[in-house]
Length: 203
Image (cartoon, helix red, strand yellow):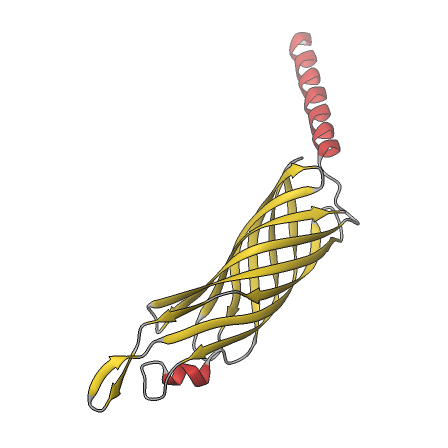
């Protein structure tokens, strides 16, 4: 019994020391600010229920850690490309091609979220916020997408969210990878999804 009691006491002491070490090794984020630059794939999803269009964009992020586990940030993005969706129209009785062009010109987002360290060199995060987008759906009159030209995006503001992780490469520098929803059109139910890969600096 004495051996068992001593073994349990030793195990408890080792567990306490390990937990204390883990807390001590966890990165302290409270009060830190950060900048990040991301390359973002924008996915206009569910166009006409079955089509998608993809744009590339670049995003600048400025944020701060309120506590070790809570952060808030602003993002400013600029679209770099556009994409087309096949469509048709009648021209003098003939059916001819008339594509829809989807373009994200620029956008801005505000997020607040949770940040949880997996290790000293890696963390995961989940953020919820609000985004504004300036986007165009260009289509010719009397074409498949004529109504979308007038309806999209409806409200330029939408709830948005993203989830991601970061990975330290050198002191204060991190690679980030994330995915989420940037915007949902109130008029057409087109969901604008975002997939980003970037570089973050904390200071």
